[in-house]
Length: 396
Image 1: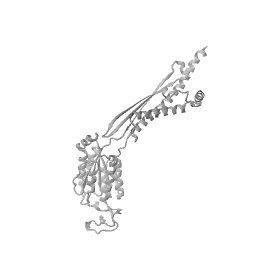
Image 2: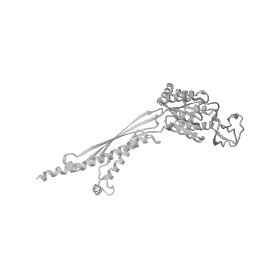
Image 3: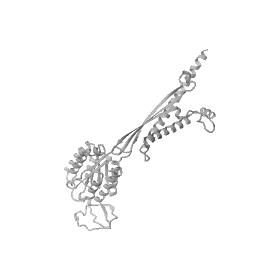
Image 4: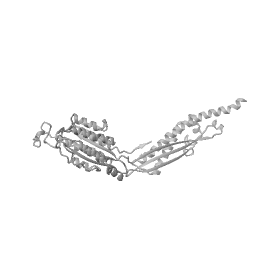
């Protein structure tokens, strides 16, 4: 009699144990499928195909249905698969007698679309999936037929990132920038190859062969590569503003920050190497240009963002007077405190010039040493690539 009374309870307890394990496994599978469906829709919305909202929802539903069906078929115990196979018509396969996906799942998909910058869009995809899990016969002895399991996932994507920037170049055009590098200029048969040893003969040095690329020409090529990265990232000149100032023994007239790169490119291409070296005033000007309230206002009006501020500081020598090192360091400190990103490039520079640029760089990764024209071009290109990291983002 006691056995007869206790047996149903023992069977129910055993059934509950099986169903609890099944619930945990099913919930994990559903969560994985829900995560994948949300990411699939978010990715599709920023892909080249650019589906509309309803099409993206259909992608999420199809993805979720496929993932769930595969998981259910894979994880069905072998005995249940055999039973399902015996019950189903041969032409319809093992799953014909099993509940269909829509019979045991309800899915809610919401996609919120917002403006991102001047022309981009941001998307937030939320997928909620509810699955009705039937209990086994033993658990049903307790009076509970089934339980609803719910999972939810959110993914975000954007067609444009929110990285507007203002970049100002501080470039040395002192006389040593007219000296030759070790790179042959194949466009010319012979030219005046100035060096430190023969600089006293300027401008009457006899042309010789081969002709070597000058430092100032290497600088122009390097800046061209940097600016090309920015153009690729912002071809319509909506997010990028650039400007430049050069210096020798005094600061030259500075350019204004302007949309795109044409103004900065023209300024740099017109540089002529001559004179001494004094960087303090030029760096001060660069700091004042990028941090001016009018600069934030220009971006705010056009792209609705507060730009990241950059200064790219380059020299091939050292300041003629130590006081200029002191002044430059003071303005470098001020710029860092204002969260301006400072990249510095020492181009075939002596020890004191290298130390100044190392001090000014925002970090060791912001400092470059270039011993050849190719090194200078690579350094400026790397700076451009870092600053122009305007890729679409996808987060989970």
